[in-house]
Amino acid sequence: MNNYDTLSEAINDLQANDYPYDFNLKPECLECASLKIEIRPEDFKVDKTFRFEGMSSTDDNSILYAISSNDGIKGLLVDAYGVYAENISEEMRKKLR
Image (cartoon, rainbow, N blue to C red):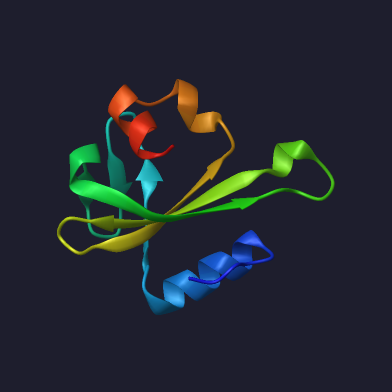
């Protein structure tokens, strides 16, 4: 995988090549709305993590996770630094470290 300068550059490249789906973070799982599925922590792995820092503010920091499910579904999860820490289960927190 490449190194990217911006979050949008990373998302565009990864979606075009291997990670076409968008995942949403829920307290106990990942949700893929377009496929109408939920993926539990034991059913996915984080392939790569990309960190991006905003130029003007530390509030602009974000993390992009490239994720693969055990069923072969690949997608992306975008999250702000530390936001997930308070809102998800311990199993999800461990997966996204």
